[in-house]
Amino acid sequence: MKKTLSMILLVCVLALSVLTLASCGLSGEYVDEATSSTTLKFSGKNVTITTQVGAATLTYNAQYEITEEDDQKYITFSYEEGEEVNHLFNGKKSFSEGKVDGKAFIEIGISKFIKK
Image (cartoon, rainbow, N blue to C red; front, side, top):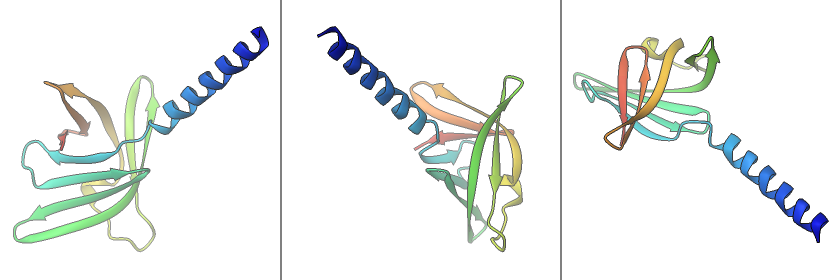
């Protein structure tokens, strides 16, 4: 009985660990708080960046990675070779996330994005 209970506890701990690791990435759609002209749609390790410039809508596909160095989080965007690059979302930028008034947000560099 004690052995069975220990085994069940171990399986529960492992399952929670896997779920925690799987939820580390961003998901959903975030809109630029200041202008609403840029939308970031995260899915897995991919992000689709849509920017409205005048009458034109520009769409970019990238991959992202969130890292931490010296208690500061960073997000790094990378593009496939030959893929058009959005220079505002290229390379390594400071990153933070949180909630205000129940709404989730992320900050990339000096821009704040609110989750839809």
